[in-house]
Structure formats: structure tokens, C-alpha cells
Length: 113
Image (cartoon, rainbow, N blue to C red; front, side, top):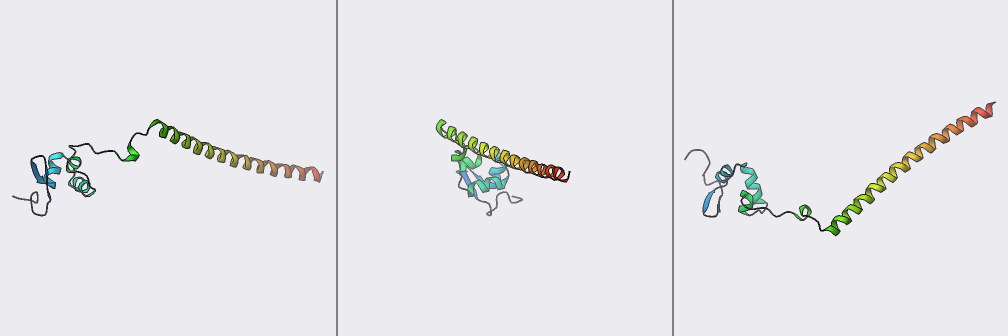
């Protein structure tokens, strides 16, 4: 055989009754070789790595129950409301400072008359 498609450097894996090198499997499944290798290194089953079996979702990717979803929404709204409140407070403080400066200028002009 030519090339390195089935050399001893390649790991052979079996799914069902078929056994091929990781390079051959990747080519057969239409995926980059390193994708397959990294999936296996991360502990995916052979079927998951090859795309024959569905990979279970991580807890963060799973659907939340309605109570968790409601709590998450409330937390997000509280954070959004606090951020909006902080922004408005800064705008108010800036406006008050500008008004105070204008009042001081006006008082100075009046005092000079």
C-alpha cells in the first residue's frame, strides 16, 4: 500500500463489525482526521466520534425545567434592570453636575451687575 493510510502509526478502531484506521474512518465519514482523533481523546465513544450515535448534551446544553428557566429569566431581568438603573443614575449625576456649573456661572454674572 502507498501513503500512510494504513501504517502501524495509525490507531485502528472498530465499530460494529468494521475495523479501520482512524484516517480511513475519517475519510469514510467525511470528517477531518484530527476531529475524529480529538473526539476519541476527549472520551467520546467510537460511535459518537464517528457520528453514528448521538452525543448526550452537556448539562448546560440541556433544556431546563420550567422553574429553572423562570429563575434564570428573573436573574437576567434583575441584572438588566440594575444595569439600566446604574446607567440612568450616571446620566442624572452628569446632568446635575452640568446644571450646577450653569447655576454657578449665572450667579457669577448676576453678582457682577
